[in-house]
Length: 280
Ligand code: PAF
Image (cartoon, rainbow, N blue to C red; front, side):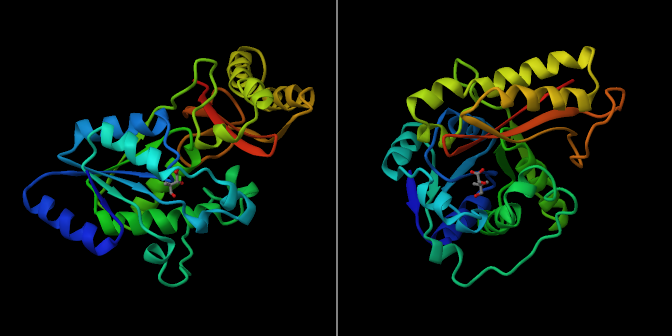
């Protein structure tokens, strides 16, 4: 496994790989790797001749400096995990390497960044678009792998590929859960024991909400979810929305011929957790 720190060194290696006719897979991460990430790595390794995993905590997607500061980082352990998975190439750039100067680009993400996460995390998705476009430009992958836990991000990355007219296949990978249903996230290790025990309530509520679609309208399901969190003093529901899976428009009627997904964000002991579940 080779660890690169500069775009230049990485590009030289990737040029040689491309010339040899191998396809290139990209798994972009912010480190603090867990089984969600390793499932992406396994899938990407099986589908490509060469694989690049990137580890970079991207400052431009954090709207809160305290959140950026607190974001878990464990590079030695991450590299150990990737080494054991026989990953070919890891890219660990510095902030200066990715942003030699301020990135002033503003991406037209339409309605996609106006809802849900976009409402609560100002400019978050523009920051994601900035770094993902830079990684795409550097790695020029044939396929890039994103987890469905960050559902809105996945839809926005697909939009970005269209916007920039890139020939990259975006591969969506299923959410990996702990045995008690909590969606795996790098942020989970920031939960204290009490909050970690409470956290599966989020997934349980999503499942119960899905069951209610037989007899409650979408707006009523939303009110029911809101009421469930009112009984949870340690949890603050940021949003729960039922949206379709292309333009992220609200679903008003179960009869709509669209794929429906329930998306949720909750603050628990200062840790922000997101999850989602297909409601079809
Ligand atoms: O999902 C993440 O970990 C990040 O948003 C990504 C895609 C690596 C961009 O920084």
